[in-house]
Image (cartoon, rainbow, N blue to C red; front, side, top):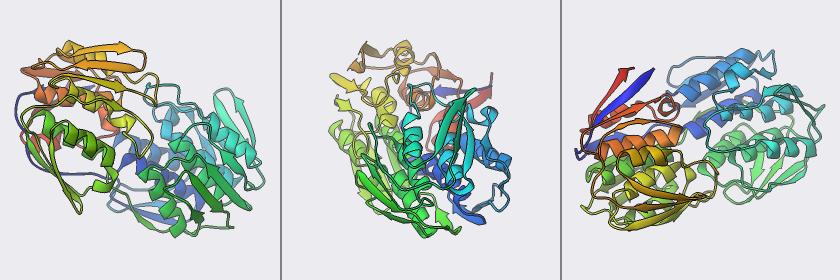
Length: 416
């Protein structure tokens, strides 16, 4: 098992290219099940979760490679099962459920795993499929769903769900009649999926709002698609510039997807200039303490809460961070406290009192974004930080140690 060693205290300076978004690539790959043929995807990041999805599609009969652009051929889908062995490490595996039922009329999908940041139940996915006429059962840890042909329905999500919106939107593209998703997710990754589905021949309206309408069609056709940049990766490197009092130029990104994070980082004293596909970020000496509440897009993303907390640990006063999406997403707090952070938890609220400095220490990553927060803290800390269990990090950040080393970080990956 690998771990990272970081010698902190060095301002970062240089250019960082932003990779394609994992959370956009995974549903696009799942969407290939909707249409037999060769789907071509550019800008897919090289990540552990991507390899898992590739293996899952391969288990069903799809062929693919790791070239750029990547071609996924779904001519020969012969099994409609997503086994536990492949699904247990990645919650996004559940995204094959909707496409399988829509095109192949049946699916047997293991209940998903992934980061332990909260319950994240898939009951909203299953309820929606039932409303569309599917027979859905849970047996021995698997979801079994069947339908002669799905039928359009009016579906209201009790809470905003990104994967639920994506799953049912894909299912509805081949359903009979019109499906309306109310209280739908508005994330850029949802819009990117809808754009590709429309390119394949789907009829979708209202993307970007909380009401999405899909008129089903009889068949879809494979097309080409370029994965959008990873807004969470970009935002993480924005924090890296601020927490090290450095100067980073982020290229190949979408500034319009970073609005809520940019607003908070400006309030924290960072200097930010955005133009076209570039964001330039400078530290400004002092980090100002700023409160934040996580919300669905276009609000402040829960996937940036841990990284922002690392920045606030070095703030000039006290900040209050409220986690409103997941109930168990403060597992990084104890590790940050090992490095000298002053943080108190009250339910879903963290009160962060800024300290003058952080100190390098052995810490353990508990989930994907917690891992990133510890890397950021290590970059700013005095001395050496040793981060174990970084396999979480490899699920969502492409070559993070190489990108950081290229802009001046002293960081190494070593075998434990």
